Figure 1 (cartoon, rainbow, N blue to C red):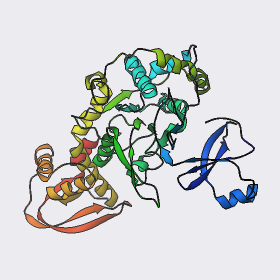
Figure 2: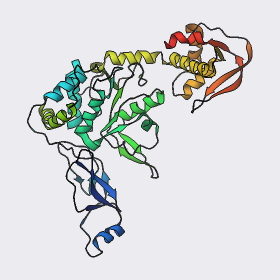
Figure 3: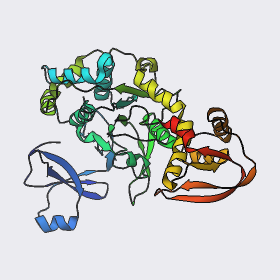
Figure 4: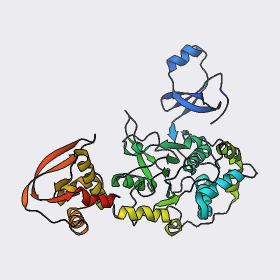
Length: 400
């Protein structure tokens, strides 16, 4: 919560742990409130053992998201969900309205529904929102910053690597997980985000601490400069809402500051606005309402994902070793693809090699297959079987 720095500390005890509430200064000149672990010995040094300050005591932390009727204390538990920095007030918000029209275009009413549900019903599941564009100066990152301005510490920025880490305590209890420059090209990455987007419970884990189960209510808002393959989205998947964002006509370097001033008026609008959509799925929206050309483009690309991944792997080997040809059996490539998280089998790979690439099996014999390590090292492995010979020219046309 933004505010002025306090000269005297305030202390709370949660469970058996003492915390000091401090105001950390920001570059902007504001302050953000934080709770940091403290010790009774330090407290006695600061105040004297006979002059200790009053300490509020709680049995533990809870996480209950609410923006309209926020409560900091629930029974004997302290709410870790943060109140918003803005109070709704009557007023106009032309800069926010114009910006949201740019982001959501013909789906502006659905976009306003999304933000309204996010604000008034934070526990409601919502689709994974993905903004894509291979052009610059589109406003994708500004939209993430806009959400961060509204929801403050309840929103956090993640990197691609954060999803692959076993430690998730810094984002598992947030309302919004925001990712700029998304690129998650393994099926296991998609499965994790998909499962999280509809998870009611999740095990949170921090370094050096036991895992504990929490109620999970986070929503994912992702941005990418890759319009074709920022993340694997299977044809039957209905949990993604993908929008292609065009460049802004005229850059406004003061837009964030202008929108920040309008947030109280925008929140007041969301409180009184009538939703244009009905609750028709576990993620609220009817999936047909969220179908866009941008979503279909990714699904179409991923329908050919196995073939493209095969070609990319062979190309990387041949380019790395300066080869014009390489040998392999279908099971070799199937094994590599499965290790990368792509769901496939040997029959699919064999069909692509023979029917799409026009390759024929060779006689039984020894050959070298190549494994690409985590650091990019390429290691030959001796194999024996009915191998096929893949030429660099066979795969160039697939990757172009």
